Length: 191
Image (tube, rainbow, N blue to C red; front, side):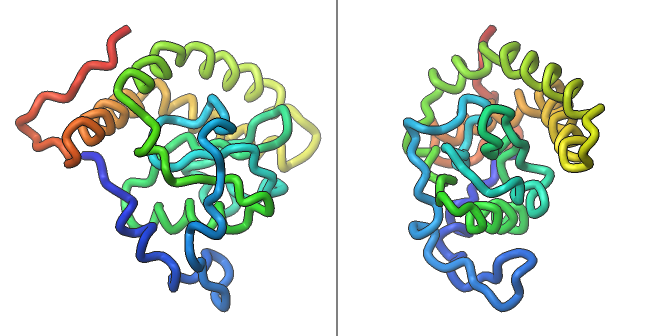
């Protein structure tokens, strides 16, 4: 079932940054300033996305079940949206450490059912990128790239098993402003 992270985002200012017990997240508007037009195409649809981030590969240290790195500039990509308050805090903490402040959590204002269907229809492009980069990084001589390959494998598994249901739940959320009940039919993503 889709979980709305926005109440946690709104109430997050006094939460400690993960791994920084003496620092608070503060106002998300101060560090979640990514622009929709600059989001990376590999971000999965949902409220959170990376847009030209530069966190020196810190995001996976904080939110490894949610973030992978792209191979052009090393920017961070959100491959799994949060499913509860703890996971939302992890993503917010990863956004907090980004010196470019290029994460965003306003995806609900931009994604439409049609855009989600288009993204899903183009998933073979994502799968090809994941496979190519995972093959390259998994045999790299640096530990950091080999660990990053673990994230690419996790994204690939999620793309094959679980993401379609999550996106169907998200499209229902966008259309209805609430999670679907178990008896309600979720919209198709088509192709």
